[in-house]
Image 1 (cartoon, rainbow over the protein chains, first blue to last red):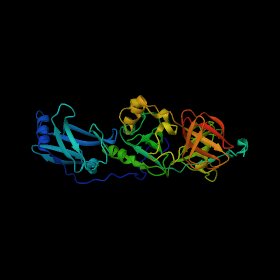
Image 2 (cartoon, rainbow over the protein chains, first blue to last red):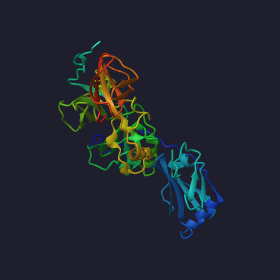
Image 3 (cartoon, one colour):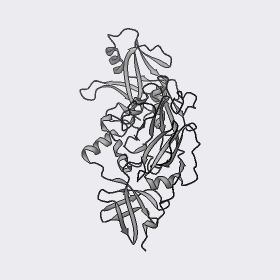
Image 4 (tube, rainbow over the protein chains, first blue to last red):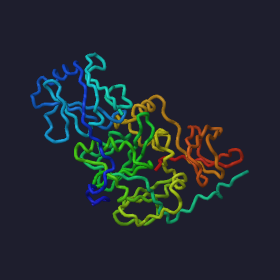
Amino acid sequence: MGLIGGSGLGLPMAVEVEIVEVSIEVTDTAKIAIEKSMSEDGEGSVLVISAESGGCSGYMYDMKIVDRPNEEGYQSISVGERTIMIHDRDSNLLNGIVLDYKDTLMGGGFQITNPNADRSCGCGQSFG
Amino acid sequence: MQTDLAAVDSRLVDDMNLEDSRPTTLIEGDDVEEVLSSISTVKIEPSYPGSVSRAVICDPVGRTIDAPYVVHDEAGLILLHLCDGKPEYLSSIARNLSKKGGSVRDASLVISRVFQDGGAPEQGDDIFIHSIGIENDFKIRISSDDEYVDSSSPSFLDFALAQGGITEYHLGGRYLPHEIGLSEFIKLENGCYPGQEIHARLDSRNPVTKRLVRIRCGKNLGGRLITEDGKLKIFTPFVDFFAHAIADEGVVDGVINHKGIDVEISTIHSAF
């Protein structure tokens, strides 16, 4: 049975995650890069941006091109012909981000500037 | 004045049932070990219910925030926090788990933890963490009832300072895990975690040689203690003759005489 008796769902929540309506800015270069990256993907594909725990500053950005998630809990942002989706649980961390793309040999690729981050890692993939 | 350390009371702990009232949390959902490992200095592997692991959580500059015991349970992972309040990093865990239907729940009211003498009888389904304390004479009893609790004496701070326990004085981002008796839980192969860059740089360029020691003496010393072999920074109050300090590498265990007062120094190898 274990100490908690098989299910802890009767216990009070210790932490509630705040959900906000997400607004993000995508630069022109990022829009072109998104279109290019998704050019071979069908209309049902979307770009999911998320914040996972970990990295050297506490959270790590993740970007994935996936089939549009069926489950509820995602917010959609249209970028030209494409759609960016952000999970409700990441909404207060990712609200207000600026998604840019830098075409440089070193440190290039998608870049995220996040007004909610107190600190970020040199590699640009982790923030806290 | 010469102080006879033998006469210093190392407290009576026979039949001790000392309650540890710090917060307890249940984290439940898919990949719960992976989520906790992503912010811990050591990887938490899936294990059978009733087994106990240890996580150490640091801030981005590698200083210790918490070092919870992790009890593997059928319901998820039970974190026995060492910090006094609910730690902020639970928000990060909650965010990840809740995307897959998991959650972070307050288990403080259903789980009790009690420090006991090592020889106290064991029965039932309770979980025990054995061999804690400077002389490995104590254990932690984790149970889902509170029939064993007697929080009257000694106080938790008394006990922790006398036996090498971690208190709020050790946490809060003040010290590296290496400096407070948690070196064995720094595993750089766990990959990226908050503080990992600092720990990796220390490991390769400037290994931490300072260590946590217990000081016992008959007088309340404060601040910095300078010996022939190096310095000791006393960072806790003295409670009933005991305090904790961070010692330079050269400081050796044993009794030294400091301005006429005998001071006993004992390394805390694995803080609980």
